[in-house]
Length: 155
Image 1 (cartoon, rainbow, N blue to C red):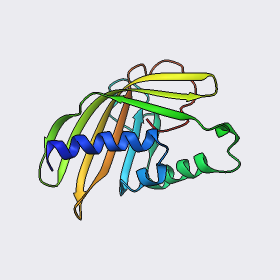
Image 2: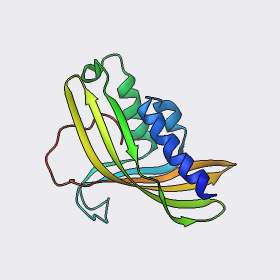
Image 3: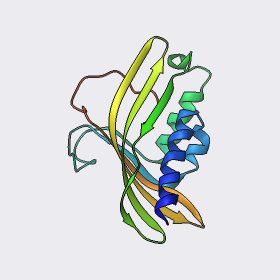
Image 4: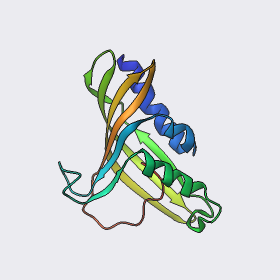
């Protein structure tokens, strides 16, 4: 992988989410990948400590199907989101694997409510059959210990 490929991938993933292209976004995930959003600052253990989100591929697909469901009344009208990214910082890189960290602002809106979250996102990426895929994603919310409403979409 090259730094440019990694940077483009991170930006393209955020664009897919902003455009509501959730099924295309799901295709970026390896079958055994985990999406993790810790509950506590510097949390190290997703299994024995409560997390805001710890979802495998099956749960991510359920979440996306719920967003598109005809009876998902909490999404009428649909929520929308916007990611504002810093340039990803590449921590590890090889021909077929990489780890990158990106700081970003995530805005989610529905009707007259808007939520802004400051995030640090860690991607674990692998090249599989020529494609870059998500092997894991960790999203740390800067004020993770604050009370806030439901996050409807995926930062």
